[in-house]
View 1 (cartoon, rainbow, N blue to C red):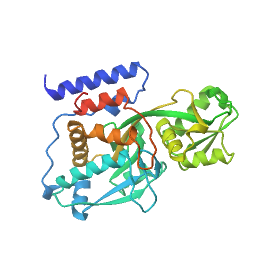
View 2 (cartoon, rainbow, N blue to C red):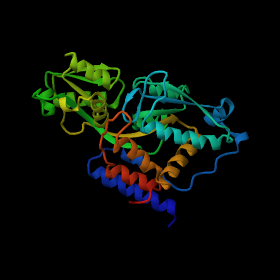
View 3 (cartoon, helix red, strand yellow):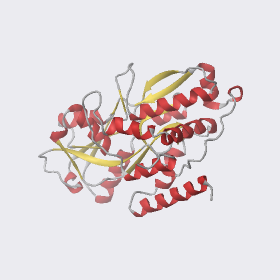
View 4 (cartoon, rainbow, N blue to C red):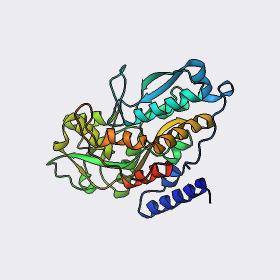
Length: 318
């Protein structure tokens, strides 16, 4: 049995095991990206698609979220930072070699949950480096890198509010970023449980918390890791409780143009290199377990699910 065949079998076994554990039907397609030897990159003078444009212009266009700590964050016009940004910078390194070796410049463009997919589809950004969930519906429009993180939709409520379960949200208002899988998960839960709960859509997680402070909402729904990041950044962690189980399963990936095989080869080769050299683990430690430049420390060890996915890309076991 070859290495690639063995890895594919292991991926299938992992996906099946996690499905039985209740991790959601989207898991196999999110993880099933074999980590065999990277395909050879075409000669620079025969490039097509995104790689041809990058070689011609000498520029890679990166979309990023301004309020998605620790994945991507930064002020408009400035240089963003974060876990997803570091992963995308590694892809840019690989793109440099794949497009002939000339140093590439980077143009950063802020995106929102509402417009990020459209910008990739229209070819206005080459890589979307934020906190984007891979779903079957989205994969019909765009492509995703191998798995980068695993989280789920959860609720943040003011401490002392009396809200402890999902049922306590009956008659309340929930703030959620529009255009996210969180919004869909919340609306589906409200319908299933027949709750009289109002959904208030906002631009991002930070705006959702501002709405709670202003009295316009009683709770915030978002990916658990984004809730923790926003509260840590604002210094408000002690004032909020995260309640209830996950309302959805959210496997993240770097988003890029669909049906662009040369670009997909570069993205996959990047992750295989990062896994093989252990850089993938170091990047994770930098943003989730160590103190950030702002002084914030999330203290989120790598989940077993993400650890296994990285090992299937070639990360040596501890």
